Length: 123
Image (cartoon, rainbow, N blue to C red; front, top):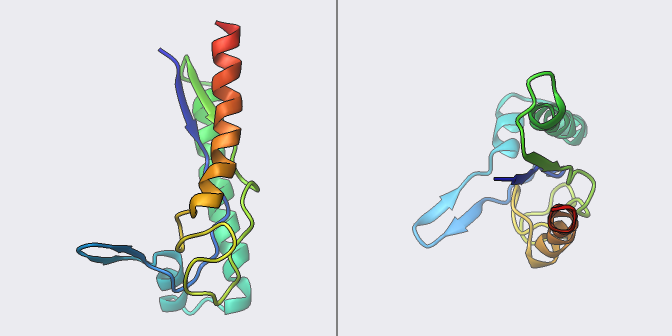
């Protein structure tokens, strides 16, 4: 059975937690970088580096030396317009620090849909 997954896109560290009925979760990157006293001008670089390393690991599950059969990874890095550093709410393609908004999810869906179509047509 084919499995389709994705990498993540480049999230901007910002004080924009995920809000749920039962409270808030996060922010994650913002808190970690702020608490670690990483200079703010380096936040995006650090977050992008972490995203790239995670993506490389996920992509290696598909194509690496021990690749998983029928795993298909859609590289979604660079799909979304990054949120503005310092913004705290819905901004560009992002609803909060790590989740896209509706417009962002639509952009991601187009990439995933292309992979699904390729699998279905190739079947």
